Image (cartoon, rainbow, N blue to C red; front, side, top):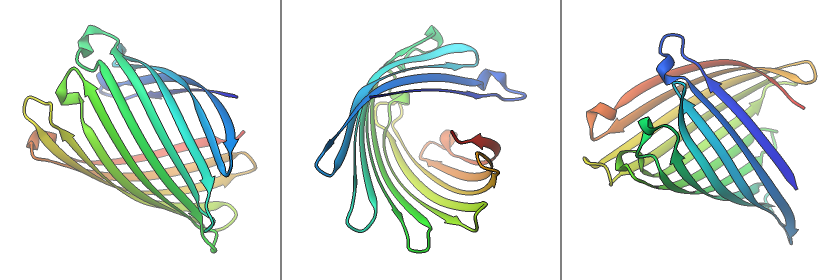
Length: 221
């Protein structure tokens, strides 16, 4: 039996109406069934946008994990959550979401790690413009340069369909990333991360390019 909790905050220097905050908590009961490691449990969460209550979520998550004969690890996740809006500013997000996630990860003979991931998400919300059906695939490759430096690169592709919007639209999001991790002593690490994204929509108002650079510190417990 395990309990988890998390908090995140995103702050903008000159656009505080887009500031984001979120909290989440979950409980999980795990057990073994043959070669499978199984777990199931409830989740709750809440988010704020620009200082206003955005959403409240109650859900359930189930997962299955097993080691394969080729040395890889397969992990399957199903999640369901029911969402209600926080402030009346965000009417329309109320509804439900189903999520399926399949991930295969394998450590190669060189010590590098390859991860493949497939993700399917179906939303049923009051406002069709925030109720997409999404299918995505990603590949990540991590290479340890030496005992202190780690390099990681990745590519992801996601197709979104907004069939319930007043003007139905399709979007294709392609993202690439490159990360450099430097271990500092026993517990601390320094991370430099760059990501480029291109979103192509049949509605030009939703087409964009994005460049993001992040610098962070992490501590392992």
